[in-house]
Image (cartoon, rainbow, N blue to C red; front, top):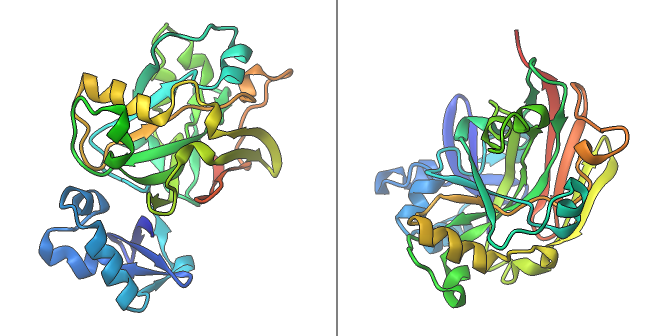
Length: 285
């Protein structure tokens, strides 16, 4: 099942993709308290949502909605840095014993087909195509053997980075969470359709040219181990997002550097999920 968050006629909702349309689950399940995709996950109602979506016709055409970030209101967006060896090598760093973590804030992300914003204060706007996962049930100190059971599904993420601000200090946050600089979508593909997230292919394209290409079996710290590590630090709850790291090929490490500019189109495609596509715009005056 593909689940997404969207806006139509000024109303925010969530739904399931069906026959090139969307079954509006938010409208149909609001009486049960499932007003957002995060609330659906909190209620443990994925199976009910699938049955409902399978029994009715779509309410909206896909080309008539505005895509929102898959989870517009996550409690946590935890990003993993330096998690592919080719990216570690191009940065001149060394592989760390434990995963490098930082956070983004919800205001830093937009949905599929929505513009991402190059801030006025920098021209060093870089792409980072990544696999994101969404937590489906609460857990703490989760063992690796059961880690995948805590995932609701997977999506694409463009972890847009403002490189000169990222380098202001040894902490990444200032360059990693500029308003509307990243994107998340187009939808969440539930784990029954992706039983093994280590067998996916990821490709990032800028204006149609391939700039990143990898397979997820090359992650340094795999998805189960990331869940073990992060859930030791803090509880993971439904709707939390973990962005698993970008491969080599980032614009900052090319000669000359390859930055995203207003008017560009950037795409992140992951097998079994789909393609996240966004235009780049200048920061509005």
